[in-house]
Image 1: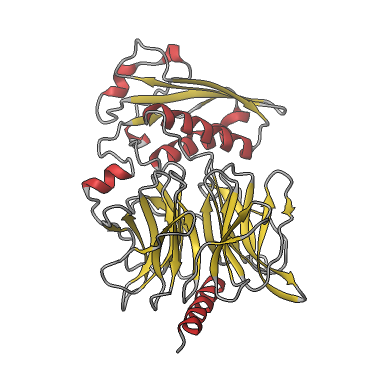
Image 2: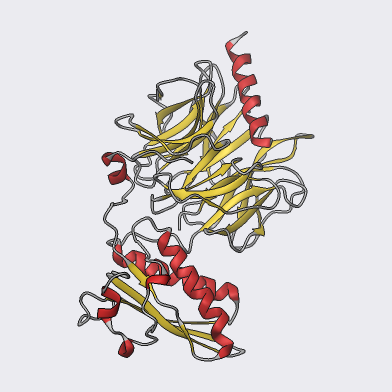
Length: 446
């Protein structure tokens, strides 16, 4: 078979894939790289006190979401509420540190507060105190005011959790207020959807009544670039589409000849890189964010696709190519020079590269010979590899949270293709979607 034809067939195979764990013990280098220390401070979150019966349901909602956010942070430990003292403080004057330090709570920090609610507004007073240094000022002290709705209370809870995580992680941001975009066919056609990081507030963004794939957030989270099927030169083919979060509408992007897929953003948000067969063979091209002046970066026998731009340096691009026979990972400079293969020990298929925010680690999906697709992480400099999933269906399309401590991915472990999150060491897997088929998740940068 001719190399070009073989590459094109592999390319079509990967497109059809798009249409259609057990965690390992983390090595010291890996735990350091993802910023997850084994010594986690214990943060108790007391039940927030409702000031009236009307505030009870929202006080329960607020409390539970804060606890869940902190537990999933990867850097804190939240003791079970069954260990808590019976009396919870509602304001700092009621705080009795000793009873929270004692076993079985053994807290280092305590979050608490109260809710007041009317038909027009909910007001939440929230504090975090270092109970082992009770004479100090509050670590966090906030008052949240807004509409008395579940959605608004959820947002306030995520904000309070992120405040706590930011203070106790040395300033690294939390991800409780971030978003995840994904593709869902639950309403009949594959459309772009969005949701909160914990799976709540799922909503449809596009209504193309066609096929949408591979959404990618812009660095400022104002746009989503994705693969769509749209008319071009009298034919319907895969093209690059752009959705504005600000206007809720598509942004104009030119249609190119051939098949155009898998867009990705440069770290500064000024360029788009994508795979295109506009000149025959599927190669990687880079353009400005309006699709102007597309420049070819690769030139090889076989398809090049699924680029991922190093977010830390902006100087390196990871991508997938079958130029050697099967889809494998490659690195190249951002100008297309010095392409090198990232060898994996057992060969097989390697797809879906995604850089961690630190620019050091690459997550990817790897199908080893006689095995299923699973999520792995590689240190791009040393080529050390950690396996995160195994023997739990197909696990593909990993995407990093902006804190570098979480991943979102698609998995068939429950029978149907759904969106899951987990900590970057493979622990605490959470299923986020249940309705229809859901795939191609991408975590917002902020």
